[in-house]
Length: 339
Image 1 (spheres, rainbow, N blue to C red):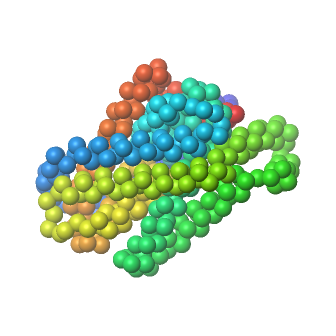
Image 2: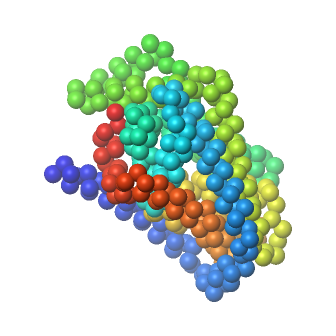
Image 3: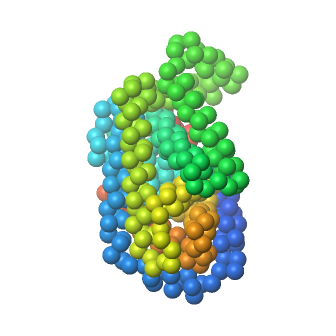
């Protein structure tokens, strides 16, 4: 019965994500000219795919450095193992709904490097907060100097509340004193004993997993690698979009705006490969420089393929070498076995 409940919960999450994708796809395909989409895709110069693949691969190298630094407080771990888990996790994110890849990489790293999964997940939460803050401040600059529209301001306010609030929380947790730690533990006493004991283990590991942020050097490295990783993703998008035969000049600031919208779109619960929100973000961003919906969709599909295909192939090879299969790490099991 418990297994059925877990399966039912997972299916409900998957169904919700797919429904969100369908809604966005209906918006995308309304009044779309598929012939024009194909013509625009054919105009892409494949020579641009190679440098784009290289710069995107470099962003993973930098992200692995950041993740290793976040994990260093738990245990000295191998960089290659971190990079491997990162690729497998992002591969799973591209193939499964609801960003399940985060649980996959926590599981793989925990199994192979003998790190508590809750500590690994704490580092992933910190990653996402730093990513969100980087993008939030970039969005603030874009709104202040280039794109001052009401709907963008609303996005800025919402993301600011989420990521600035999240940053304050992880800083508070990472700097927990015995008094504040006791307060956190005391606040869960309302739960039954078996749940309380489980939460204590998770909270303790979570606090340990954020310990690196106490160090100014560690904090600075995490901040710099976050900025570098997103700069490389910006370069990747700039190269790909430049490979299309467009009637407008692509400015660096346009790609920065596109990067922010696309990154935030992947945070929306959706189906596999972020289908729907991802493409709609391209349509919204490129409409600002009068690129048609058909062409924007072609650019979105091409960008997604160039960026995701190498990650999926690499992740699948690494998963195979680990003698695992994609369906062997159910998310429900990970949630219930974090310690």
